[in-house]
Amino acid sequence: MAELRLTHLPCSTSRQHARLRFIPLPALLLIVLLPQLCPAVTLPSLQIGLAEAQSPQQVSALIEILLIFTVLSMAPAILLMMTCFTRLVISFSFLRSALGTQQQPPTQVLIGLALFLTVFIMTPVFGKINESAVKPYMAGEINAEQALQEASLPLRAFMFKQTREKDLQLFLSLSKAPKPENKEEVSTAVLIPAFMISELKTAFTIGFVLFLPFLVIDLVVASILLSMGMMMLPPVMVSLPFKLLLFVLVDGWYLIVGSLVKSFGV
Image 1: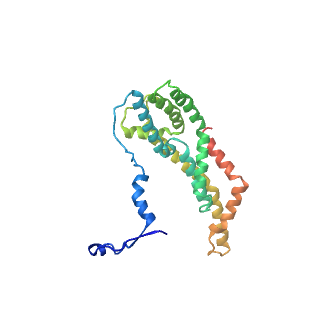
Image 2: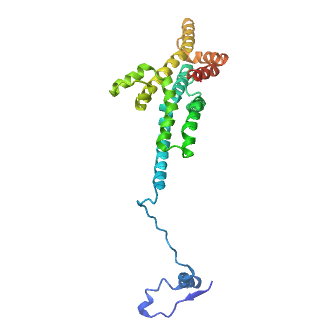
């Protein structure tokens, strides 16, 4: 490689350039020509602020985007509060506890099954919401407030059908609101918690019914082991195969899923 040899330096500068005795020629050319070879680079600027809207459509579009993100963030709560998901997932949890299979089926499988059953059961309600609220709103026939009002009607009808009157009266009294003359005057804020505790009671009732046959098997196995003097052998370990055998012979998933879906009047 060609090199530029720096020699015969004056004494005043010899010490300063002791380490620069040899400088490669390509490096020197690169340093000299770099400003001419590289054009000026412009950096973009980012501005965040509030500007005056040019038309009402811009404001309405921003509000719609904000409402969409709000609904998406509340989707899990809406799924739990206003659909049949609560009853389904609690019933499946009781079933797994009654079988005594620990983590089988896994929690993800039970939640997935409950989600798909929720979609199946709520399909008529979602279809009514699509016909009465979503399509007219997309076509520009109604505004966002009217669409929200129309969408709440099928959900309210579903929740009223599954809510016990006793639970509804409880929250009406707690809210200290005037006694409504009909269902249309009942606030959604009162209806939702009443629907939820009604679903919890129904799910616990289903769980009690699911426990009974498996409890009988546990008692029978425990009595047999005690009579044989095998007190050190856990009855649960012996009864588990018999419970699984009973569940498979009666086609338990068919009976339980069919009963749960029919309990919603589908």
